Length: 206
Figure 1: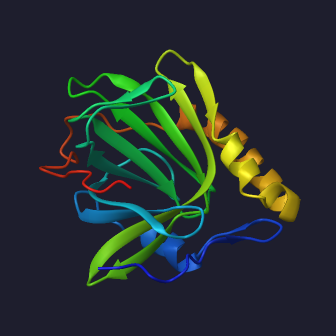
Figure 2: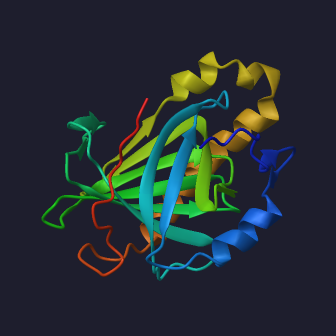
């Protein structure tokens, strides 16, 4: 199964969501299986993993997915990802970013990881729903104690985008500021609810 088409969402003096994806997000059924695909800034596939659609208290166009971290321990700016952790993942077909709340197996919130992205889009491959998010360099980590770390400004600078497309680069920077303000308002459903995945693993990272 591959997702070869270029994402419908784009930026041209503003973010332009894929209308079909906005409608498809609204029709997702809690408890159903879904595949998540991450694309690197150059459009290549960087990761693929299964998740479960969760019932969420957050307003449309946000959807909430549940996935499990199955890789060895990773620590990013103080945020720890341990094997067996649960990720509550929030995607929007209209907003230029997503956010992952990381919980320990005991249900303790470790913190949030936010990615600046094109608005997410949805495809159906072999009759299976697929959420695709296309990374746009900048990230933010917010720990459980409120500590904030801004990440990957060097990647944006090294991309050449600030010189080639300064308006787009400025929009990416602003999107991270907006994401930082938005994350505290997102309400994850609690680990242990019926929406939690049974045997759902994050199995592909590259």
